[in-house]
Length: 214
Image 1 (cartoon, helix red, strand yellow):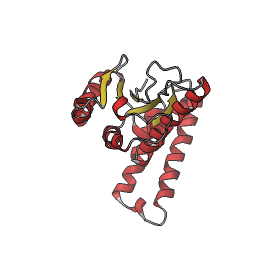
Image 2 (cartoon, rainbow, N blue to C red):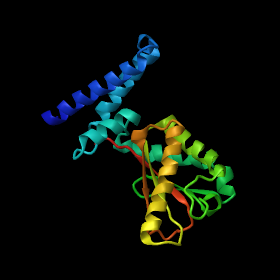
Image 3 (cartoon, rainbow, N blue to C red):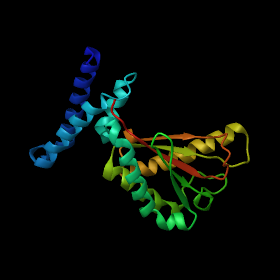
Image 4 (spheres, rainbow, N blue to C red):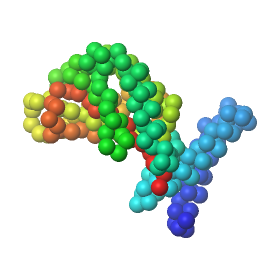
């Protein structure tokens, strides 16, 4: 492995261990098997993540430490099973037309918040009826790891391009913050608006991307 990447791995491992140690201060968590396991798991994840995205090793280190990575040959089966998990968990919403789940090229999964559960016109405040759906999606990511969530907000049809961009970004960020509050690790969740979307009805897409080691 290239020396510069090795240096970054060492730095990232030190960061993971330091953070774990800080988390244990005052609670003696590092004296327990659980605490020690958390450090080992974080270090292993960081080492795996270092193999990701050679053009941006630090990004790979952070994501790997947060959720781990998949060997290339396991990606298809892993994501197909996650689709089954989501389809089962979201069956009430899917049957009611409130959400859809589909697999995309590259083994990513797309969960869409449809117009029935969308944001109210002009609003970036989450519809309370959609919170249980987010809980289910976040639960799958927390349980299995090895995935990131890219939240894509859609605007309303009215307003200028700048207004649509702002609203789409605010909606995506509202969902991202909700995932964080549910315990999904920050390194695994990103948010962006889609102001030029063809679906200007306040919906939100959540793209679950597999994290693949190279």
